[in-house]
Length: 154
View 1 (tube, helix red, strand yellow):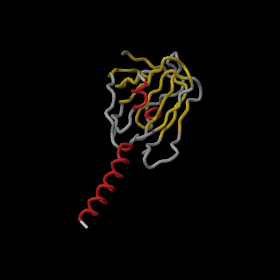
View 2: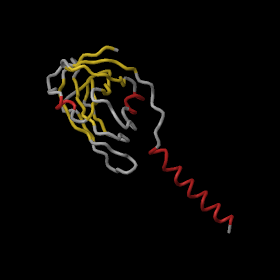
View 3: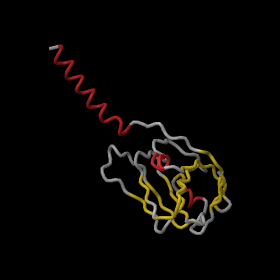
View 4: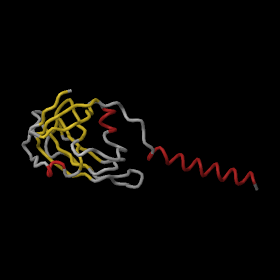
């Protein structure tokens, strides 16, 4: 009987650990910090410039300061599509073209990919080279509208 309990416990632990990696926080890549301006509003950002940084983004973050965000930098313009896999906080995203002009703003809802089967996507409405994720409602709160200019230094 003890042997059977051990087998059942082992199977249960194996099943739980197999599901855990999908939800467990992975070690994030290193991100550079920078300062930026969106029109005249100063913000603190971390730069996502590599594929690994793009993929990880703000996953597993539990909070974001009111003027903190992440700037995704791409090598060229294109339709950019974001999703909220393992993102625990609601975010606003602003897409900027190659001249760093704001071309689109969208509100994105937090998602847990373990519980959600079909994650919504948030494509830019036209080609973008930069995407700025900020706390939900940030663009509206700061009266930042399409046409605003982004400036940052690495």
